[in-house]
Amino acid sequence: MTKPAASLRAIPAVEKILQALGDVDLPRPAVVSLVRRELAALRSAETIPAFEEVVKQIQAALNSVRLSRIQPVINGTGILIHTNLGRSPLGPEVVKTLTEIAANYNNLEYDLASGERGGRASYLEQNLALLCGAEAATVANNCAAALVLILRHFTSDERNEVVISRGELVQIGGGFRIPEILEASGAKLREIGTTNKTSLKDYKKALGARTGMILKVHRSNFFMDGFVESPSTEEIAGLALKQNVPFVEDLGSGAMIQTEQVPGIEHEPTPAEVLRRGVDLVCFSGDKLLGGPQAGLIAGQAKLVSALKREPFFRALRCDKLILAALQTTVDFYLAGAGEEGNGRASPVPVLEMMRMPMADLKSRAEKIVASLSGVHIKAGVGEGRAQIGGGTLPRSIIASVTLDLVPKNLALEEFSARLRHGSPPVIGYISGGRYKLDLRTIFAAQDQAVIHAIRVGTG
Image 1 (cartoon, helix red, strand yellow):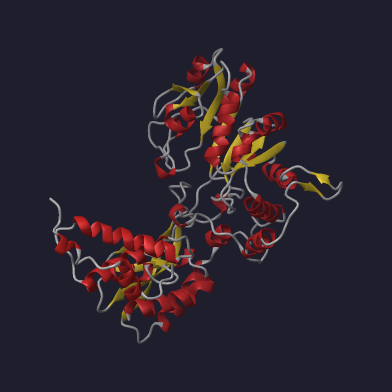
Image 2 (spheres, helix red, strand yellow):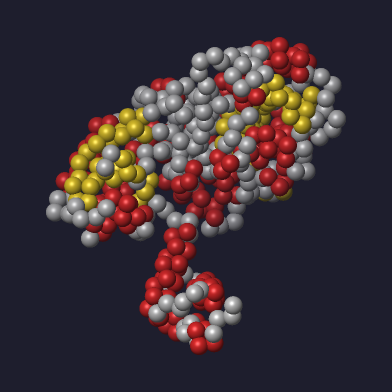
């Protein structure tokens, strides 16, 4: 039923709303567009709210838009590689490199030695191969892209079957599933074994004239226990070599250190370790345990890496100057010893520094923060935390940590959490055991004062 004209006239004009809103920290065209959408929605509403209520609703909508902008946040969740919060943060030197490259022209595809056009990322590829103990390496824009590139190359003709264990058909972040990625590339799955048991005999039976490659997917985001069996990488590699079939492993996490040396963390295979076991190509993420920018890294046999780079599809997956520069700096840090312990220096790779941060340091920071909150309307204490790696990595590993345990005196925990989340910068924690908790293992020491300020404002 059409709304009466008198009711429609009660909808305020756009300009009147804009004047009532005043200055808004958003581009004016975006504000005008939102105001028009909100006012248009009133045409189908049963009743038209008072002017002040309309303004209030639009202000809430604008605030929601403002909060949706990508911006720095303080991660108090205790999850080091938090996919929703941008995964691994970059260190100061990497940020400096990004600033210098972004603000100037650069030699992305220019050979300074000859004065002619040069290869893209040749320095990075050489050092990445060295770091991985590989003959060659290259980079795509994420690990899924790297896997698709590999699949398209090895399954582009009549040999289009990919042999993979049913126990490795995993779902990764954002609802993406390995089988869907495989099929999207044009490959045909040849599933073998069962969820919990796959034998070498299963691999042997599956190989044939239509086999394009054997794919092994590291179970980085889950684990199976109990009645479980699968052949070793060396056994599969021996079979692949005998049958002249490429053997590829998607490692996912890309650890470059012996993770088991960190208390509470299990062993995570490194690319070098997997390649030594006989895998022909390995792919992994740049923004997980490596601690660099988002990228999909590929390392292995030189002839295979070269073939991948000749694929026309590779151009659609290549990284830009900023990703390559950040990754180059990160790889150089590792080659210079960033992954080693016992040198008395802080690691330039933040995710490694967070993993290794001594409990005594965390507790000292927590006690100072609690002391600084004296007089604030909040009960603050030092608690125990259980930090996790996150990002679909090392799901069984727990790192002991220290938390700030906060209970506002005149505020519900949910409201307090929302106030911190809506602050500047936003602070993200979690509610557990009747307390609001901030895990200091994922909060940089330089952010402590910002945390104190956010708590004071949030309780005010």
